[in-house]
Structures are given as C-alpha cells and as structure tokens.
Amino acid sequence: MWTLEKCINQALEQNIDLKIQQNLEQKAVYDRRQSQWDMVPSLNGWGNSNFDFRRSTNQNNDISSGTTYNVGYGVSSSMNLFAGFTSWNTIAANRYNEMACGEETKLASNTLKIAIINLFSKVIYQQALVKVAKEKLDVSLAESKRIAATIETGQMEPVAQSEINATVSGNKLALSQAENEYQLLKLRLAQLIELPENTNFTISSLEIEAQIPDENMQTLDSVYAAACQNYPSVLKKEYELDYYRKQLHISRGKMAPSIKLSGSYSSGFYSTDTLANGKQTPVEAQFNNYLNPSVGVSLSIPILNGRYYNFQEKKSRIDLENAMYNLENQKKLIRREIENALQQLEAFNIEYQHASDNLKFAKLSFETYREKYRLGLINTTDFMNAQNQLSLAQSEVLRAHYSWFVQLETIKLYEGRR
Image (cartoon, rainbow, N blue to C red; front, top):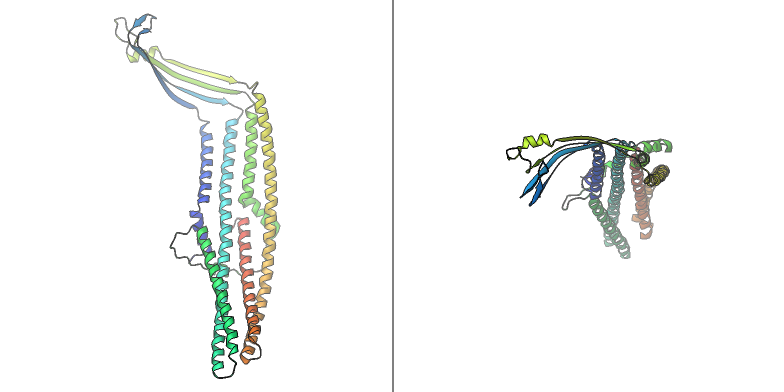
C-alpha cells in the first residue's frame, strides 16, 4: 500500500529537477572550499630547457661552436599579505551562497511535497467518489430487481421498469466517469513520483481518514514566526542578503592597496660549463654555483582603476538594497499565504461539520423516500432526486475533509514540521 509519506519519499529520491538542484548546491560547497584554498600560499615547480646548434657562450663568456644546451629549474611561491580583506569576505560570501543554495534545495523539496499532497488528496477523494457511485448503482440495481418482481405479480405497470432502468443506466455512466477520472489522477500521481512501470500502485487512505477536521488553535502570528525561522524561501532571502553584504565589503576591499609576498628557489645546468681540465662541471657543482634563492614584496595601489572599483561598489550597494527589498517582499508574501491557508483551514472545518450534519439528515431522508417509493407513494423521479441528494451530501463531506487535510499539511510545511 502506498501511503502519502511513501509517495513523498519516492519522489524525493527520483525527481530529476530536485537532483539538479542538489548538484547546484554541491557546486556551491566547492566554491566555498575553493575560496578557502585561495588563502593558502601558492607553490609551483617549474623548468625550462634551451638548445643552441651553432654558437654559444660558456661561463667565461668565451664563444664556442657546436650543439649545446642548458636547463633551468626551481620552485616559486607567493602569498597575499593584505588585499583589503577580500579573501576573508569572499569565503564568507561563498558560505552564505552555499546556505542559500541549501535552502533553495529545501524549497524545491517543499514545492514537490505540496504538489504530491494536493494530487494524493485528489486521488483519495476520487477513490471515495467511486465508492459512492458504486453504492448508488447498487441501490438502483436492487430497486430494479424489486420492481421486476413486482411487475411479474401484477402489482405495478411495466412502464415502471423502463423508468428504473433509465436510472440504472445513468448510474452506470456516472460510475464509469468516476472510475476513469480516478485512474487518470492515479496515473498523474504515479508520474509525479517517478514510479517505475509495472509497479503495484494501490493507494492507502488511512493516513488522511485518521485525521478528522477540528477547530484550529494556531494563530497567524505563531505560524508566521515559525515560518520566518524555518521556511526555506525566507531563509534563502536572508542568506542572499548576507551574501550581498559581503560582496559590498569585497568591492570596498578592492579599492585598498594590496601587498604580496613572493619567493623562489632556482638553479640551472649548462653543457658549456667546464672545468679547467675541459671536462663538464658536475651537476652537483653547477647546482651550487647557479643557486639563486630570492624573496620579494610587491605593493599595488589602485590609481586609474580605482574609479572602476568605485562604480563596482555602487552597484554592490544597489544589489544589497534589492536584497533587502526581496526579503521584505518574501516575508509579506509568506504572511499572506499563511493567512489564506489558516482561513481556508477554518472554513473547511466549518464546512465539514455542516456537511456531516447534512449527511445524517440526507441518509434519513433517503430511507424515507426509498420506503415511499417501494409503497408506490412517489414516482421514480422523486426517488432519483433523493438518491442524488444523498450522493451530493456524501461528496461534500469528502471534499471538505480532504481539502482541510491539504491546508493542514501546508501549514505544517510553513512551520517546518514536515
């Protein structure tokens, strides 16, 4: 049996769009780690080689002929001592971007959950309507058999059979339409949760039926406060605001002078380097002879490009201001959505209570009309109207119940309880 929770878990594991968003979140993690590694001093090994085929100069600046070669090799390193704290602010900005991407993933999950809850409830609702249609058909079939037996005994005219047969035919059509709609909704749900083909897909309604609508004790302020602390769309905008704050600090930092420390450790080997006896100088000796450690400090002060960074700072201020507006707008939107959800939750609860009372009277009324019909006190049209009134009362109870459940689950998502 497929419960709502099982359907949600299946969708979270298989949904392609969600997997794409999870990959984007992982990229944000790598961006943050990469910016941290940028703080580590760089260290590079290098080497080069040159060949001369005719003329070359030895260590004594004497010109010699023939093929000669030389090799240079070493390691170099550099590190930013100061750059307006741009590296630290970049790490912080990437951390907030990572958290914003994480909330975007949660938001995608919540959007998927809401879609599944809505469609799952529709499937259960339609499943219940099929049951109502079957009961309606069974009642009309029973009356059809009773009327046929009554006609045989001569107590009723044959025309009564035609009337009840029309009712049976109409109920069969209604049942067929309800079953077709149920199969279509179930197919859409199976597609939404990426259900493998040929999987036995039997829906369980126990989870919804176990929750009976009752009076809501939650307030707008309490749900809204919980949403501001937990709901991904709000947290995402807050992290984006922090991200743009750091971007503004980065823009300011680029206007400051930067100091960079660099160093190298290199040597070389020359085929023209020979000893007094004409033999080539050994590698070890040449390594020491040409060894060249070095350390340097460089200072960079923005002058003409300082105006460029000034415009960048102004654009960062605009981004920060827009991020503030986006957060404020998102909070207003969430508050309105919660207010609507709470209003509908209470409305569906009231509708359910009234629909339940109406169903009790509709059942009593139908039994009365059914008895009158059997006694011949009313015609088939009156009986059909009573039957339709009972079916409508049953469907209204179901509609209010399942609509209330959808709003309840939506509020749970806002509060971070699902």
